[in-house]
Image (cartoon, rainbow, N blue to C red):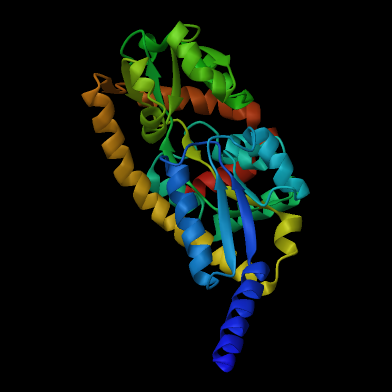
Amino acid sequence: MFKKTLLATAILASLTVHAAQARTFQVGMGDPMDSDQGALAQRFAELVEQYSDGEMTVDLFPGGQLGPETGMIQDTRIGSLDMAFIGVGNLTPYAPKLGALTMPYSLRSHADAVKATTGPLAQRWNDIAKEEAGVKIISWLYSNFRYLTNSDRPVRNLEDLQGLKVRVPQNEMMLATYEAWGANPISMSWPEVFTALQQGVVDGQDNPYIVNYTMKFHEVQDYLTEVHHQYSLQPLVMGVRTYDALSEEERRIIDRAGIDAQLYALQFQLTGAVTAREGMEAEGVEVSTLEDEDEWIRIAQEEVWPAFYDKIGGQEAFEEFQSILGY
């Protein structure tokens, strides 16, 4: 009996030491758990724990619990937060060359988005993020195109868009784009959007299907138009100083889990967008496609692109990026 007691005590002590040595990473999220951010985050957490045999765990903080994206990126850069989901547009103030991914119509299909974030191009953006913003891109979240919604009228062409008050993020490029198309863009932080739509401060906004549906915009928006001007990419980033402080094995596990979760999230997005569209239509939202999208593209290329070449690394670099995508 005494030997059995000693054995049990030893096992318990071993488990206690193992638990104490387990490394826990905190991940900040702006969106709720029932979103595509949540899908990638949960899968990433599962894979990290699996690949590390439980020696590494991930705690998720959804719904802006750790603050807005602008604050979370600062926290990851200085190392007070391990990881966070940050929209590419919110990374560009720190790494302007990433703005190539947000230029209107720089990505025009799901295939473009995947090609731009895998292989040599993925390495290009990661090098820029590390050198300029001090963060490493662990995984890319594909959130689909930012489709335009509004409560005023169906938008099927540029004429329908004229004068429409559209909320846009605090992003100079998106403001310039909607202005070039003849809309009245209004910059507004994310927490204010639903109330602004509800009260008629703005007529509309743009976001991917899943975001539109999970945020219940169908309750205050009657129309949706599939505009393919910007593919919403939300990388999961880790501060370079945090990443470099990990052991080689820990870095390998984080990298592997990030890539595998990225593939999982892409499939989730493609199927989830269909479900979200069906849900919005069932709630009475009228979905339209553009009759003249070539004209939207022409205006973007001729009026918006030239104004931002210098801010994203130059015209030559951007044209090289476009040629790789086949444009």
